[in-house]
Image 1 (cartoon, one colour):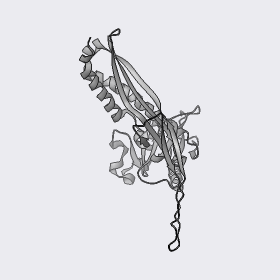
Image 2 (spheres, one colour):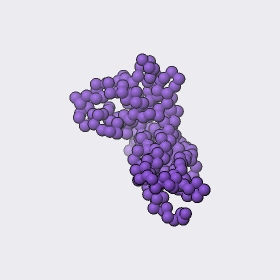
Image 3 (tube, one colour):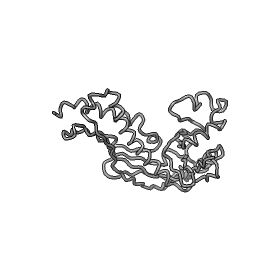
Image 4 (spheres, rainbow, N blue to C red):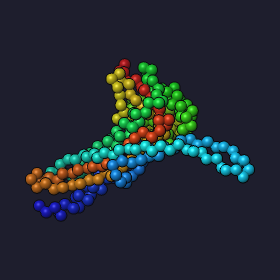
Length: 277
């Protein structure tokens, strides 16, 4: 079988995988600092300290802030997600079935992207809120909110809180989180299928991949976008090759990415108990 016959199949499949990754692969990539098209095996993010304003005398030299610059290196790793597509099976299926395979590969890589970001968030330990044998509560959210205020973390619509689905249910039981009298009709969590909403200037996002320890304590993360960096040398790419001995295409989805902690002051780890009643 000539490989040139399948070029239309290959090109469309590559496009579908890329679109699926952009559309639904990763929930968290857009919530952190991102560098794309990295050349090399690592990327460097700059962490800049706080400056101090001072006075100067007439005709005197303008005082220098002497900002503290720290280079944070993020190591990139290669990830793959492949599968076989039998040639005769293609004749028996329609375009929707091919889309299912494309989505599966893109979502697998999307989950890996989120896993890298969550692993970076998990290394933060400066600011933690103990579980207290309870789930997510309004007091825990307010405590994280206060910590950000004390650390001068910008209140610039770039704050995020990623929680587990049990904690999302806890949030839906908080009157201020769901009552239009407090947040307005446009911010009701039931009004969107994306299951993310703004509360206290923070975007809350439910996620199924957050870590949980042996005591059923789930770690949730309240963070600012600048606190974590994500780097990509290669976004999702798809390579499709024909194997005559198997009478099938092998579809290989791959990417090269990494994530790292930049500034712990912009992250609060919230412990939430999930012990069954």
